[in-house]
Length: 462
Image (spheres, rainbow, N blue to C red):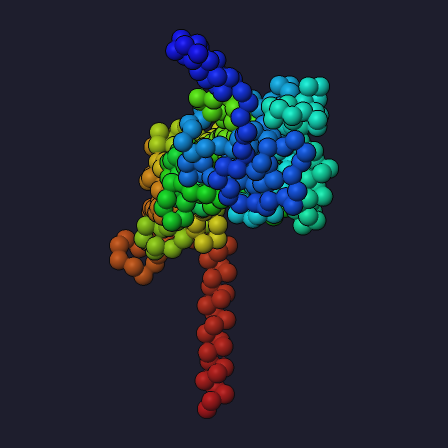
């Protein structure tokens, strides 16, 4: 045989070696899980392993059953949505189940859970479908024999499979994240309760779900502007104690949710290797809520007193106004403080001479203007410039004001009583000195009678 013929034989032999199928292995670098007690017919060695594989420091699960397991020396890239081994789209419910289980159990260290998840992934992604069947001798077309491996993995793993399937059916996505500000008015510097909720597709709460949050124009009780909370075991909304620090407090929340469609990672340099799925089976949800916060309401208390006696004056009508003493003051809800007539409200001092106006917006300058003078104080009351007292109401404080009334001057009598110094009135009378004849006879008779009586009294004494 000449050298040329030998060379041709060598080339043909080399090509035959390159194109001949090689014995594949699915051993990889096992992590958490179990090795089934038997190997499916026609499956590549190592396919007994059910669980995670260690790949570049991570724990991953494989799909594309029976192909070689991930090699840490081979880089992977994120691909499109996960398909079946036959290249078909997954049923939406199965896709949602896989996304949820990857989110829920991707960090498990339980061998039973790792094996159960691997069993479910192969069952859902490598079923019998056309060219993918249980009799194929090519690993690329070999379907996963779920019944065979169910018997080989043991009852504890299959019990875990049933539990995880039920968990996925009850809790799979899509989820909805929301946040809510309190319904009651928000006060700057006062604690309020905000809530965050994470709901499943059936509108029930996701249990034990971690939620991150950040605050703006607000802080926690310890002064921090963010943190983490978790829904309870029943999925009830989580509560956050928030203290508004400005007029527009808000909260932004973030949570992981199962993706609608799980994403697969595929090897960059070869197709003859299993695809893998990791914690990439989730999507980020976010929501926010905001409110309007005000400073704490204030109050004003005015005392009406007598300027001389310093005693309280009851029943004084006072009009509550703004700084201009004409327009209405503002209540905490920003509405005008007016009476039934739509004008600034008028109040009266009580028996103690005081009146208090609560629930006022702060800061705000308030005036109390006297409407009419109380009895006994009319003389010094000028309706064109009535007495008024003004001041600024501060947050959470009561402004104390005092308004003084000057009493009327006492009335001085116009005549001086008898006995006092001054000209005393004297009564006078006039007498008639001309006697008429009749009067003279009567007077003479009276004189004679008086003399006779006097003589008789003298005789009796003797």
